[in-house]
Length: 113
Image 1 (cartoon, rainbow, N blue to C red):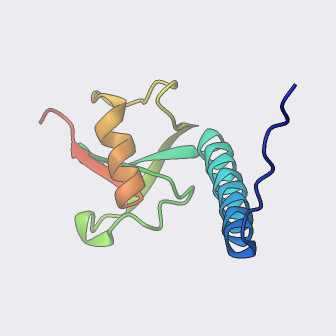
Image 2 (cartoon, rainbow, N blue to C red):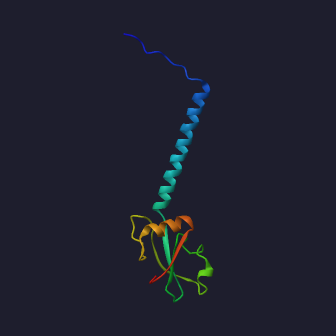
Image 3 (cartoon, rainbow, N blue to C red):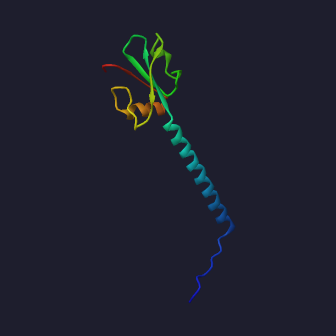
């Protein structure tokens, strides 16, 4: 029975492979951490005084929602879990709300529009 030939890989190639494995492990760890964080997100729904202007924020106090949008001040209305698998308490599908929260940290809408 013939023996398979033994190949020697250059040290640079081994080092490159080891760095790639380390980078892949780090990326996987970051992905898992982000997924866990996303599962734990709590959304806050606020209303602009007595107006029909609402906002959802990933910040529990809604500090990231622009004050210029509501001079009366934002009032807490509800807290809820944020995620595609959880219902969002707004008359809009969850995708645009989640996309805006990911991009800006908040989503604003006017009821009836």
